[in-house]
Image (cartoon, helix red, strand yellow):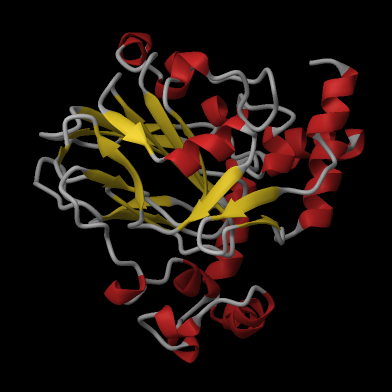
Length: 309
C-alpha cells in the first residue's frame, strides 16, 4: 500500500450508515485515543506486537472484568454510551460483574427476528459490510485489501466452495449487545477452533492490516440449511475478549435468530459466508459496503433473501 493510501485509510473518523436513522454517523469509539496510539504510531505498534496481541494480556483484562468490583463500571458505561437499559433482561444493579453485564441477554421483543422463510438475518448487533461476490471485492476497510479465504478458514479446499460466494462481516463494538445468533434455520455442526493472537478488530487497526482477521483466534461452524445451502459462520476474537462461548447444541436443528453463543469483554466480529448464488444481499448493505462504509443494523433484521426464496 502506498504512503498516500496509508494516509487516506488511517487517521480519519470511523463513519457508518445507520439504517434506522437513515443517516451517516460518526462512531463513538471506546478507548479511541489508546487505539490510535497503538495502531497508528511506531511505539504503539511495537507495544501491540510485544504485549497486547498476547492471549495472556486479554485473559488478565478479562479477569479484571470478572471481579465483583467491576460492577461500578456498569452504570457509567450505560450512561456514556446511551444504552437502553429497558432492553436488558436484568436490571443494571443485578449484574455480578462487568463481564456479566457485557454478555447480557436482551428481552425477546427487543430484537424481533424477520419472519419471512426466504430471508436471512444479521447474526449480531453491529456495523456490517456485505459483499455479493467475494471474488469481486476490491477493498475491505481500505482499498486494495482483500481476505485470503483459505487462511481465514484454515482449509484451502473448503475455501474454494465460497470463493465466488457472498460474505457479510459484522463488527461488534464494546458498546454493542454481544450475543450472536444464527442467520438462518438449519442444522449446525461442531465448532472448530483456530487459535491465534488477539489484535483489535476496530477499523483503526483493520485499515492498516486486514490480515488481522486471518490471524486472530476464531471459531468456524458449518450450518446446513434447506434454502441457502451450506452456510459458514465465523466468530473472531479481539484484544480484551476473554473468550468466545458457544451455547448451541451441535447436530440439533436451530431456528433462525436462535442464540449461538456470546463474546466476553471487548470488541469482536462475526462473519457469515454463503455459497455462490445462494442469497441476494440487501441493497443498502451492498451499496454502503461498496462505498467503504459500514451499515449499522441489529440482530434479527433482514440482511438478504434467498435466490430461491
